Length: 333
Ligand code: KG4
Ligand code: ZN
Image (tube, rainbow, N blue to C red; front, side, top):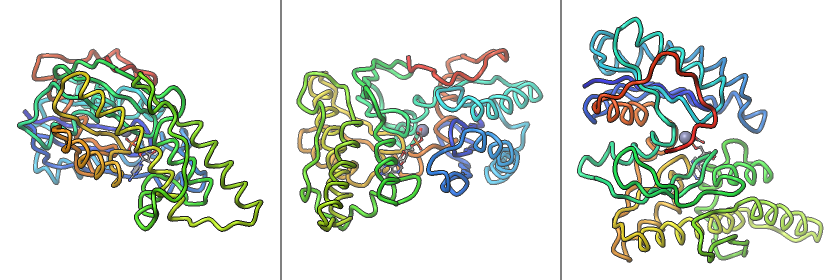
């Protein structure tokens, strides 16, 4: 089965061709430069840029995959959650293609796509797994008893992890998106140099809270500045990152142990974080767990994960009717 995957939920246009779990092409047009001067994603600009990029990427993705429109067995597209205008560009394109080519369309939940990225590279991997989903818009721990079924154990009660990275990066002048910049800066820093709060780390829930950390870091920087004290930027980045990662590791590994599930997958844009990847692998392995992190390009938004998630559902005979609309607040269920 050959499936086309379209991803336009936020600021990356992704188009991919996946054949039976093998990526034949996976193209991305990032809008980072477009939004950077505004310090965050401007929804209207994102929609317009998707419109421009999509057709170009589509031609390139088919070309690179060495397939033609007639070879496609289905069209998978992100229908939510995300920015409504951005989602609509992908959904309209998917409907048109599916209609003209007379193949099924399948609407994919963006978070299910992130989860699928872990399975795409590991054909031998099977549920049950515990999934830590960490991105710019979401932070949650779910149990996946079987493919397509999600039991949400906990999620953030305020900011998402990626959002915290982006906000602190902006405050210290590192630009947008902030996660990769902080990750890079932190490499040369001491994660124990400064102590920041780890909200909810030792409570019984699997929930997260990152807005207090963000406020604490900003207040701490202001106080240091006012006192005329030097701040070592690398240490600040490493210490802030450590506070985020500590809670993620503690809660995710506890979920795996309490649920008796031996495999943990870490997915979403923040799963590209080098410290999170290294520590989760090390500490998870020590506790006898198997830790799976997709390659970096499959952690951040991409079309291949959407194609793969769509293919799994299409193979079960599912499809989405053409009167479906984008769902910006789509829940994972
Ligand atoms: O999954 P994603 O590409 O888009 C959403 O679904 O939101 O995630 C984007 C988020 C951004 O907040 C970005 O700063 C963060 O992932 N991110 C990182 C890293 N790479 C991307 N955060 C920490 N470390 C990274 N290396
Ligand atoms: Zn995402």
